[in-house]
Image (cartoon, rainbow, N blue to C red; front, side, top):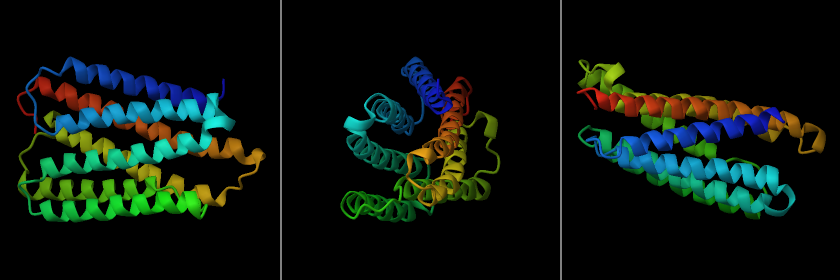
Length: 223
């Protein structure tokens, strides 16, 4: 089996486990932002299944449709992550900044989707999403250091979620930046797959950290 496909299937399995963990804690009292994380997990599972289907089982027939579905799901994830950060930072000075950043990011992603399918340019709008995640994460970390110095990080659900988001975004941007420079010829296909495998591995780590966030609900501190 191709290593790239194996990593994607492994990632799908990890996301599925994350979904099951979320269901396990569904009746547990928890902060309101977990509803956005639950929907993020669902969209991530849909994204992974779409990748498997469009790229490897129906490569020729449904590839472009699969790309379009992927783009829409990534925009949905951006909205959900934005709402997550808005919820955990709603009492901070960054509330308006988050709203403005999300408006710019989502508008840019929608515009880029149109350009990709009309002008045939090869720029992955997921880079816009990843850039947004990094900025939002940095706002969270700054607020954490400035206003919550006594928070026990190992027991903080929001910290582990943000750490996963931040890590995955930091890996995604430099990797996707390489894609336009790789020729589209068939002989370079394996190189492209190898590059995307690193993105998939970072996503696996992200979902493992989300599982850690749910486990933190067993402890008194869930902020």
